Every structure is written in C-alpha cells, then in structure tokens.
Length: 418
Image 1 (cartoon, rainbow, N blue to C red):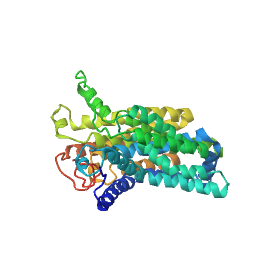
Image 2 (image 1 turned 90 degrees about the vertical axis):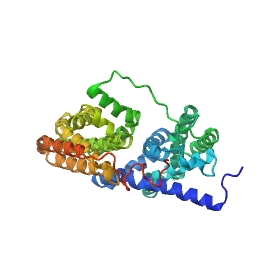
Image 3 (image 1 turned 45 degrees about the vertical axis):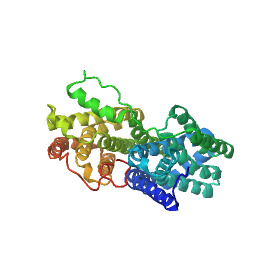
Image 4 (image 1 turned 135 degrees about the vertical axis):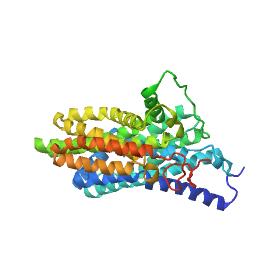
C-alpha cells in the first residue's frame, strides 16, 4: 500500500503542516518571545551568555532537564491546537495513520523553532566566547523538539511512550554525545512502537451536586485541568530568572525589592495571559451560560476569582523571596485579574487572543510598580472601573457570530477540524 499517491500529494501534505506549525509559532509564541527578549535586555545580555555557558558546562542533569522543561512547555502549548480535530476530514486524505502522526509531530516541531533558535543562539555564543563544549547540545536541539512533540501527541500506547519520550528529551539535551546517541535510539524506538493516533476523548462523569458559583468554577476547571501546569512553568521561569539576577548582582536591599516587584508582577501577568488563552480556547462564550441565573457581573467576578486563586502559589513564592515586595503585587492582582477577564471577552477579535494585551498591560504594571512601589494603590482605585468595562463587554458579546480571522480552530481553513 502506497502512503501517497504522487509527489504532488507529498508536497501538499508538507506545505499544509508547515503552514499549521508556522501559524502557531507566529500567533502563540510571539508573547513568549517578547518576554524572553525583554528579560534579555533588562537583565543584561552578559547575564544570559554566562548562564547559557554554565548550563552547557554543567553536565547531564541540569542541562537536559532545563531544556526539556522549556521544550515540553512549548510543545504542550502547540499540541492541543495541532491535534484539534485529528478525527476530522484529514483522515480521508491518502496517508496512513502512522504518517498522520508523524506529520502532526512535524507541525508541533515547526511551532517550537523560534524557541529552539533562541536556545541555539545563546549556545553558539557560549561556544565562541567561552569555548564551552556545546557541539553535542546544538546537534541534539532539533531532535529535542521532535521528541517533545512526540510526548504531547495522543497515541494508543501513551503510558509507555511518554516516559520514554521524556528520557529521550533529557538525553538529547544533555550535551554529551553518548547520552545524545542513547536519546536518538530511544526516539527511534518510541516512533516505531507509538502506533496510530488516538484522538478519542473520554468524557468524565459530571457531579450534579455542584451548583451556583461552584458550578461556574467547576466548568472553568474542567476546561483547563492540569494544562495549567504550563502557565505555572512559564511564570516560574520568570521568577527563577529574577532570583538568578539577584544572586549574581547582589544589589542594595531597596533595589532588590524593586527587582522582585518587577519579576513577581511580570510572572503574574504571564500566568494570567496563558490561563486566559486556555479559557478562551477550551471554554469560549456560549449561549447556554446566559440561561443560568447569574448576572454578567457575577460571571466576571467568578472568572476573576478563578484566576486570582490560582495565582496564590506564585504570591507565596514571591513572599519567600522578599516579604516587602508582596504588598504591591497583592494590591495590583485584582486589577490584573479583572483586566484579563475583560480581555477574554474581546479576544475573539485579536490575532494573538488575550495573551498579547494582557502581557503588555502586565509589563507596564510591573515597570510602574518596580519604579514607584507606592503607585500600587492606584490599581485598587482603577479596579471598579475595569470591572465596569468587563461587565459591559460581557453584556455586549454576540456568542453566535462568526469571525473570519481569529485564533480558534472553528472557521479556520488551515485547521484540522471538520
């Protein structure tokens, strides 16, 4: 049985998945790259260059685990978008199930290329400037992207495939040729035993005892579940960068508080941005919710409470870093959470969904709080106004309208949906 009918079919499949991955890289990873470049220039390039040299020279565990966390986080962002509608019309095209799986892995790999290029650029500089042994690490980066994509793809033998894929990722990013060879072997073995795609979703039972506001919170949690780990990892990366900056520069106590205020507020903004995007994608506005006995204001406040409660672990980590920096961040959190909810009501019109505007507002808030900590009460003053705007945006939504250009798969001619 031939996989493709002719060379034109091969070209059409390749262009289609290349377009899917490229669109994901442009739409989903643009905010991530913006945060990386902002941190790169704020924390000084020398810091990142020495940090990259240290990671490359550190050895197997630190280098491999750090790179694996980054790659799996980005693959986890791209995977649901690529795998949406795997049982749709694309199954009727002249390709085997194994080829469909490999093409999906290819699309997720393409979406990771901007982040892999950033890692490769820092590593090349470390190789030239510090003569770090980075050749094996550079050679393993493309395979790291493929192995992480292999982890997020839904297959029938995922209980066996996912542990092997994680081990392959760590080995490929270890920076040692022997471990990289072992990671390549694991990757090939995993690919050979993965089998066909398994896009069928299980529908868990729903507890009808959840009523009122708890029902709304339950719906939001069911939409996200443990995917919330990805926003947490990105926020922890911002906090970790802040901690490394403080440990390497030993600033004065007042400057340390300002740095933690900046990094802490920015980490909260990153978390709110990506959780809001998940809510938009997995729990978009739908007409049924308006039939329930909740006002628009109640729906807005419940969503803001959902975001705020999940940001509490980050607040605790910031308090462990410096208790003096917690107050300005806590005071600004209600405003940022309500602003995120407000943007989610308008996000269907934006090409980057809610993340772009939330990250922009969060960056401005972090900059203002770090420069003038006493300005933080101003956010409490503005909170009722942003609540009013969010309620108006909720009331004016037209949930049944069709938008030609937006980030969701519905109505997107390049998506895999039916």
